[in-house]
Image 1 (spheres, one colour):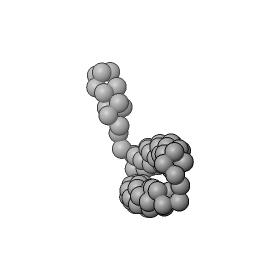
Image 2 (cartoon, helix red, strand yellow):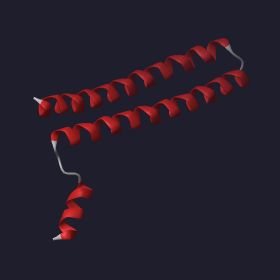
Image 3 (cartoon, helix red, strand yellow):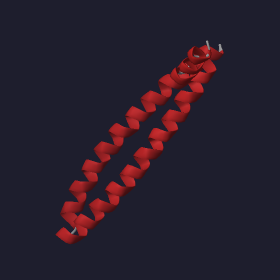
Image 4 (spheres, one colour):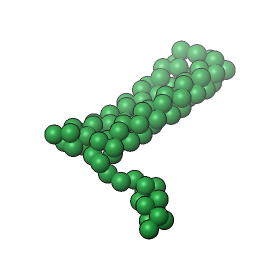
Length: 92
């Protein structure tokens, strides 16, 4: 049962990550369009730069969360990592 749960975690983490990235990109396009309509050029440039900085920060956090969930799933599944395999082979 634990292996199935770990597989489900892995699948959910990947799907959530992809979904969030897609939604974020879509939302970014909507925000840029709205900003262009409501602000002058200097204001819109500043707002877009701030939004992109926030987007990058959030994207990095999402990537970190997905990576943590993948590590957890690998551990729960009892899979051997590449580093563990190299370490094992070097001891033989």
